[in-house]
Image (cartoon, rainbow, N blue to C red; front, side, top):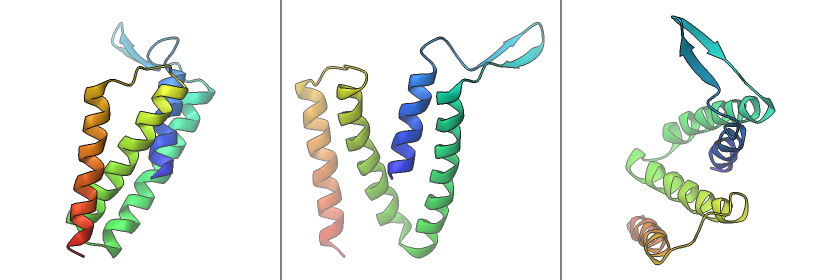
Length: 108
């Protein structure tokens, strides 16, 4: 789910200057920037795609598959965009996630 991943990346990028929503003096205030708006839009598109996918495929298959894809894309993007570290535990986790998706696919 590329739209989910890109939406999360944009939201993360947009929160560099602080949270986009604050609550103070009993007022809800929005401080949205370009990245927040793009991220929210892409996340909305992602929701619509999820609804479509779960209507067409087995829920027990499509959700783990899409979630795994999102994890892998976010993992790679976090390294290149946000300069987050690859650790042995993170890599092992991604390998386990991908292995799990492969095992789910074998049953199909």
